[in-house]
Image (cartoon, rainbow, N blue to C red; front, side):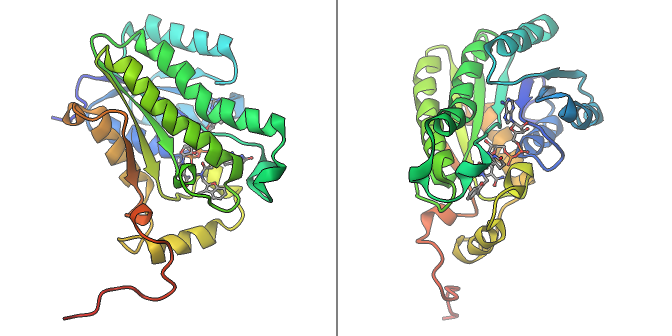
Length: 266
Ligand code: NAD
Ligand code: 0WE
């Protein structure tokens, strides 16, 4: 029997089969969960619908998290369809393309607010609406990145948004802990997704991962998915407010050592 058997969960942020959200969906489905999906815009509907169907899900509804009306409508449909909810996966981020290159100090007010709105506030907006449907307990999860706590070239305003997202995870865990709802974040190492494809120097970042990570390699969508399934399951019943790194240990190192640091034989 799977660790999520009998649970109903929402996966927000599938764009295609490379999405981290899809990694979470595959693992949650394998562990027995019944899943519902959101998609952004009609162009993505034709990508998300077949993926959802491939794992036996027929709840696929539009959601732009920038729009409170769409948020209300989406969660009303969840309530009508299921009546209750056990977990939520938030795997959504956006910043203007121009703000992910050049200097952070040049970020405009509009780009700053957009990145924080879509990438951080949206988790709070979803959490509030999802919590109403989670009785007597449940679990929520968001996706973050090391750029929240380190200055990573070009990540810029997204780093500030992820810092807000991680702090939001802790404050939500306080609020919702009173209702037995756990709130955590997975901090993933770089994965080649649609959101990563627009990023210059992504290959350099992946190469640095191979040299600087304790496991001497990068991580993949499946590894993030498995960690997500665990955090959403009752095996993690004592875990909340946590930022859980799935980065092959990159964050505990000092970065690229510049030399082969493989320990020599005794
Ligand atoms: P992705 O492009 O597959 O997913 C991003 C999703 O955000 C898309 O499905 C997109 O439709 C959605 N989105 C953007 N704006 C939205 C809006 N206004 N309303 C609703 N949905 C919206 O890329 P991904 O890499 O899978 O990103 C998912 C999450 O993982 C993001 O939070 C990202 O920051 C995080 N993350 C990614 C990496 C990486 O290297 N790929 C590493 C760590 C964390
Ligand atoms: O969170 C992310 C990427 C999020 C993202 C990506 C894009 C590209 C296309 C948000 N908004 C946009 N807007 C677009 O127009 N990651 C963790 C992946 C990522 O992005 C980087 C990275 C890494 C890692 C950008 C610069 C440096 C490193």
